[in-house]
Image 1 (cartoon, rainbow, N blue to C red):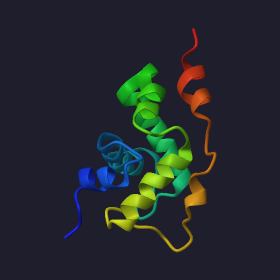
Image 2 (image 1 turned 90 degrees about the vertical axis):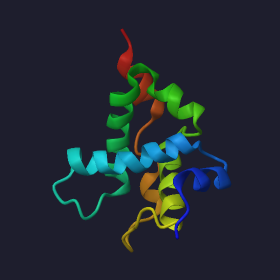
Image 3 (image 1 turned 180 degrees about the horizontal axis):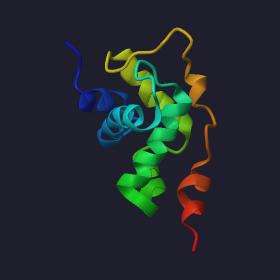
Length: 117
């Protein structure tokens, strides 16, 4: 039996259970909104989906909420994804790597500068 997401997050300790659930839900959001082929979501596409999902959920506060919950870069999204893969909540293709999540975008640019008046 696989552990629930709260237990996975608490055992790992780097990210809040809420943000782990956000990334899990963000996968569905990405499939529904960004891709034509729902059998695979790349790290880059997932990061784009998580950006839109964060803005939709938290607006101007997206960067603050993510940072407060342990996510400061797109690589952190990858760390959460691979933690879930390890615990059988997600799966990966043989060509997928954690490096797919490196530097997809800068949080300051997409979550702060976007909202300048």
